[in-house]
Every structure is written in structure tokens, then in C-alpha cells.
Amino acid sequence: MRRLLVVLLLPLALAAAPGALASEQHPTLGELEGQVMCPTCHTTLDQSSSPVAQRIRAFIRARIAAGDTASGIKKELVAQFGPAILAAPPHKGFGLLAWWLPIAGLLAGVAAITFGVWHWSRSREPAGPAPPPAALEPELERRVDEELARLDA
Amino acid sequence: MASPVKLAAQALAVAAVVGLLALLVWKVTHQPGSGVEKALSAGKHPPAPQFTLTRLDGPGKLSLASLRGKAVVVNFWASWCRPCKEELPVLEKTWLQYRKQGLVVVGVDAEDFTSDAKRFAHKYGITYPIVHDAPSATVDRYGVTGFPETFFVDRKGRLVGAHISGSILSTSEIKAEFAASVRRALRS
Image (cartoon, rainbow over all chains, first blue to last red; front, side, top):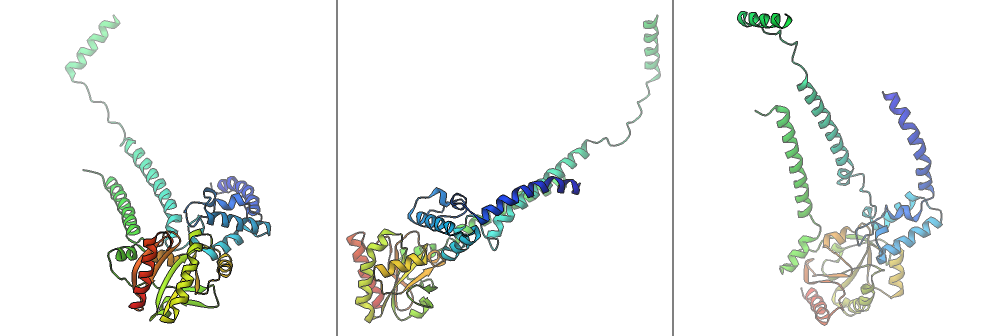
């Protein structure tokens, strides 16, 4: 099972890696605009035309032209504006909640569904071997035999 | 009678909702700066939130605590802010006029590039101390919601006078409020 998972996921990872590397080494303004916040309007840069957003855009454009990497540009922006300039929450303190809460929720959901399915399927299983059919009363049995004999005649 | 599994699931769901509600309440009650604004509006004089920030007008850092005994005008600004530029001459004039009486104007530059702020200060001939609030922590502590905003700190380190949100030149009433607040900070 694990081997199958590796076989399935490896090509995906290999396919995504060059793109991620290219994006890191040669970022575009469009990519970074979605990852950087406008500090005054609290939206990502691509949704803002405020003066500070325009200034940050010009800065990013200049750094891309100078050959800077995506992480280098972000690092400089954090130094100037603080960690809140990045759209993604930080991997520490309160920001950790934003990273782990959805994963915890997803795992809890999967666990709840798995448990529910298991519980449901168990409750529908037969409790044991079916009980033998109850014997007919002698009088009733006699009448049924008579009826059957009449039908056969 | 409900099964233990059902009870556990219900308890878990209730706990999750209570947890999220508690988080929401904590976030709302810990809004930065809201306490300062409320106290000033109620006519109180809360202690000015402290800061130690990197100077842009020279080397080192400047802390508000080091200015205890002086009246301080704390002006939040950014180089891309047009009203900030308009009120600069008044702030500079106030600083030059009252510095011998113990007044200091501190320009807190935030949400800005330090290079832009330095260029701006040089271009407009600002001579009062300028600091840079990189993570906007001081902005948050004072509850600043836009630029410019101006606060007044008396010689005992308390916020006094008006909290001017917007340009100190926007109306004649605000200009008068600015002058009165400067006098009040100096008088204490």
C-alpha cells in the first residue's frame, strides 16, 4: 500500500519541483502580488492600488529586475514592514494555529467518518446464525398437509 | 439512552464550538490600542505605550522612556502619505519653537521603506528625531488606524490632550486642538 502511494505521488512531486524552483529563482510580479499584503488595506497586493501598494509593487519589480529570489524579496519586505506583510501566517506563535487547525480539522473529520462507517457497518451485521424455524402446531400441520394433498389430486 | 459514542461526538462538537468562541472573544478583547483610545475619549490620561525603535535620523535607537521629563509629540507618518507631508512644516516649527522648553517631536515612520522615509525627511528638512516601526507594533499599541495620527505625552509619561486622527491642519478646530495639546503637555 505504502509502495503504491509512493509510486503515485512521486511523479507528481517531481513534476511540481521544477516549477517551484523556477518560481523561487525567477519570481514574477504576479506571483508575489498574491503572496504579499498591502499594509494599509489588509488585502493582497494584487487587489490594491493604494499608494503604499504601488510603492511595494515598484520595489518588487526592481528587485526582480536585479535578479533577486522570491525568498530574498520577501525577507527584505519583512525587514521593512514586519511579518504581517506576508499573506501566509508565520510558522510560529499564534500563526501556527492557522497552519495546524485546518489539518487537525481534516484529520478529525476523516477519523469521525471512518469511525462512523465502521460503527454503522457493525450495527448492520447479523448477530449470529439464524434461529431454526419454529415447528408448526400438529393441528395446523395436519391442515396444511390436507390442503397440499387436495391440490396435488 | 444515547450511546457513549454519540455522547462523546456531541461533547467533542460542543468543545470545538466553545473553543472557537473563546478564541473569538480573546481576539476581540485584545484588539491592540483599543484601550488607549477608549481611555483618552473618556478624558483619562493613560500611560503612553512605550517603544524603543531604530532611529532614521542617526545611529542607534530611541526609547520613549529616555524622554521622561520632556513633553513629547508622537506623530505617526509614512512617506507615501500626502497629509503627512502637508503637516510637516507645522511639526518642525513646533519642535524648533518649544524645544528649549523641553518639547520633543518624534516622528514614527511605519508601513514604509526606511530608504523612502530618510529621503523624505532629508527633502523636507526635518530635524526632529525620526524612528522606524518595522513590525508596526507601536502603531498597534497606540491603536493607529491611518496616517497621520498624533498623540501628546506629558512630562510624566502620560497621554494628554487630544488624539488627532488625520492631519493637524485639516480644520481650524483641529489646529487649535493641536496648539492646546502642545501647551498641555508642556505644562504638566
